[in-house]
Amino acid sequence: MSLRPTKTRDRLRIAVQKSGRLSEPSQNLLAQCGLSFRQSRDKLFCFGENQPVDLLLVRDDDIPGLIDDGVCDLGFLGRNVLEEARLDQLASKGTSLLREVRALGFGGCRLSIAVPQEEDYTDATQLAGRRIATSYPRLLSKFLADRGVAAGVVMLSGSVEIAPRLGTADLICDLVSSGATLVANQLKEAEIILKSEAVLVGSTTAFGDERDDILAMLMRRLDGVLAVRETRMLMLRTTRADWPAVRDALPLGSLPTLTQIDGEGIDVAVQAIVPRPVGWPELEAMSRAGARQMLVLPVERMLA
Ligand code: PRT
Ligand code: ZN
Image (cartoon, rainbow, N blue to C red; front, side, top):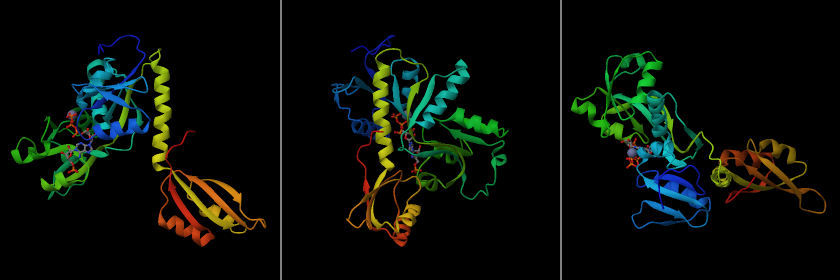
């Protein structure tokens, strides 16, 4: 199959990180959407077996360009890489077609400026005149410009955290998740520049061919998968007399259905779709209001 961009196509092509943090969760998400693939011998291409959706396995840094060139229609990417690429395109071309289609809820991290642990950091004015090492020069420069701070931006493509010890920079601006890497390098988080997670990236231009319907199918399924991740089914029993108090104690946003379960009409069963996990304090509040036999269940599939 040719990978050259063509004007019209009847299959959707998605760029996925070949190996790395986003590779497996991205492919799992597509599997949850009911898509199955057959991988090519060179492991660079996955042919969609049950839907007209194929995958191209690449380095994450190549994904913005592949979408921009029309080689791929969508991609799974960290918001940090997307936003850096968008700023880069805006600076070089004055425009960017890249857009965040959905936030996916995995690969969470922060792009942050870190300073030496012993530094008493109060605000961004302290960054003035210092050299900051980063792989995200556009995002860092924008942050500094927005605050009117003049600092040096030192571009490094890797091992940013050791730059202060090597003397190539004073501070760093890098991705942080647990914070362990910063601690190991005697640094601490001072400013969060961007809160990131994996996102589905696409282009602002419509396809005008079969891909529009395939994309609509994929988004319907993806939204279903993303919605049920947080959704819980809550089941409980109560009496008709207690129901008003129990209803008031239901987690915010619950959609309850009431069923009468005995001839006298005293006991009722309640089923409620709750848009997020239900914690012990909420169950205890419902119990105080008169709820019994409470069950919280995960939801496997949901189609609105
Ligand atoms: O080979 P390829 O170019 O495709 O992969 P890559 O090495 O560029 O990317 P990869 O797989 O490391 O990360 C892909 C995406 O995962 C990133 O763009 C982020 O959106 C997201 N992500 C989430 C992270 C982290 N968490 C993360 N902790 N990316 C990198 N890190 C690194 C960070 O750079 C630092 O070195 O982990 C270290 C910090 O981690 P903590 O836990 O010690 O704070
Ligand atoms: Zn990369």
